Image 1 (cartoon, rainbow, N blue to C red):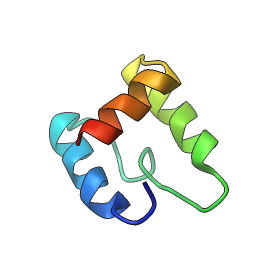
Image 2 (cartoon, rainbow, N blue to C red; image 1 turned 30 degrees about the horizontal axis):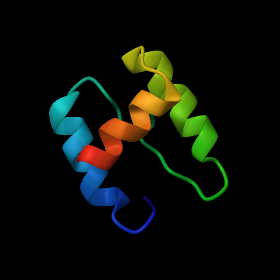
Image 3 (cartoon, rainbow, N blue to C red; image 1 turned 180 degrees about the vertical axis):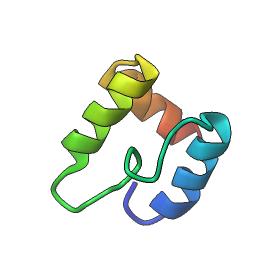
Image 4 (tube, helix red, strand yellow; image 1 turned 30 degrees about the vertical axis):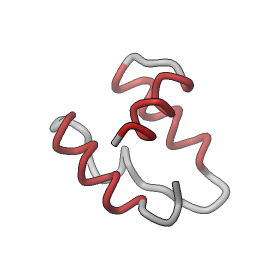
Length: 56
């Protein structure tokens, strides 16, 4: 996920326009925090989020 995160982040923002840059901020070692923010905003489980991101 790290290598092409900027491209995936852009696609996520197209799909979910209400997501902010802070929601999608990926910091090394803080992936769980990002998933937590996205789970709250999108109402999805971690597994559902991983599938969404992998399908981009």
